[in-house]
Length: 203
Image (cartoon, rainbow, N blue to C red; front, side):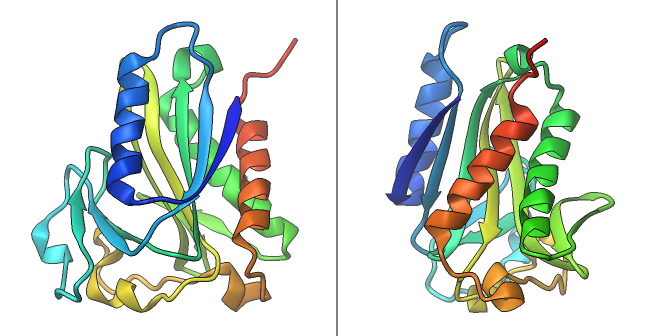
């Protein structure tokens, strides 16, 4: 798996690049994991309903082709895009989702934070508050989009939405739980955990 550290990039550019990469790949294309941050943006998934945007606070809303409802991306959040051939990785979609969630749970455990899944609500939660959001698109057996982990953000924009379609869903971040603010460090740790969970095991 090739890991690319892209820094802060506009969301529409990374969205277009993910689709282009997936459309152009073939059986020999190496899987990639892209780490980045985005300027403030709301993204609305395929099943997204407009009522989950509670008020206009001047942040753009981008319609995207992942599953799920509305979420927020902004500076201080680590985003990992997973451009994987699921057949080659020997993964079914459910296994991919569980592997992504486990990678985040393991990362947080390393900081002494107990995190868990929430039945029926993909992502990772700490005491019921969402710390990582997950959304994927599978096309021709290959994935794109991925997971976002709140590290050291301004969480105020979440008050303008029902996060991932859940009214009153609390959100949290690593800085508030542990004091950790280094998104580069956390991004590298997330990439290591994702690779450990998702790359096929060798005999």
